[in-house]
Amino acid sequence: MADSGAGNILSSRWDGLSEHLIAKFYAVDSKGYRISGDSVEVHAPLLDANTDIALNWQSPFEQASPDTKAPALFAMLQSGALSTVMNDLTNARIGTDKDKQRQALNDQSSLETTLQEFQGRTGITKLNSVQIFTGMAPVKITCMALFRAYADPYKEVEQPFQQLMSWALPKKLSSDSIIKRAAGAEGVTGYLKALLPSQAPQLIGFQYKRRTYAPMVIENIGEPLNSPVASNGYYTELLVPMTIATLTALDRDDIQRIAAPGTDVGPAA
Image: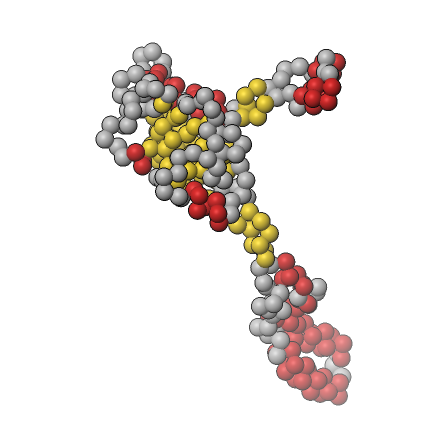
C-alpha cells in the first residue's frame, strides 16, 4: 500500500493490509472510463459495506378478484359473521309470532348451512396473484470509509476526505439570475448554457474486492464533527458514512463485468 502523498494516491497508511480490503475511488466520465489526465485516487478500507439491489415485483391482478369489489360483504362471508347478522335481522323482523318463528328456524338452518360453505374461502388464485417485473432502481452501496493519521493528519485524513467531498458536491453552481445570463447569450448553445448554467457533481469509479463499479454517483456523504483532532485542528481519525449508487440500473451483463477478473478501467454499470 502506497504511503499518503505518494504519487496521486490520497490515503492513510495501511501497511500490511491486503489490497483487496482497500477501496479505491477515482474520477470517471459518463461511460465509466478514467478521465484522461486525472490520476487522483482516494484509498480507504471500508466498514459495514453493503450492496442493496431493490427489484420491483408487483401483483397487479390481485385487485381483479370479486372480494375486492365488495370487501366488507366478502369479509363477512369468509369469517362467518354474515350468518349472525342475518339471524339478528330475521329475529327482528318476525317478532313474537310463533308460526313465523317456526318457519324462520327452518329457513335459518338452511341459510346457515349455505353461508358456512363460504367460511375460509378467498378470491385470491394463482392466476390473479402472478407477479410481474416493473423495474428496478440503481444499485446502492452503503459503507463507511475509514481514515486515520499515522504521521500527518492533513495528508492522511484531511486531503482524502476533502477529495471525496469535492467529488460529491456540484462542480459549479451559478450565482447569476437567468435574466442576466440570457442577456449575454448568443446562439442556441449560449441560451442552453443560460438555462443550465451549473455543473453536476463528478462521476466516480469504485473498486473493492475485485469488483469495479463505474460510473457511480455519491448520493450521501457525512462528516462526523465529533471525531478526534490533532493540535493543529486536523482530524486524526475520521469514519465517513457514504451512500454511492450506480448511474443506471444494472442487468446480468453489467454484473458479469463488475466481477470480471482483472477489471481496472472501463464501464461496469
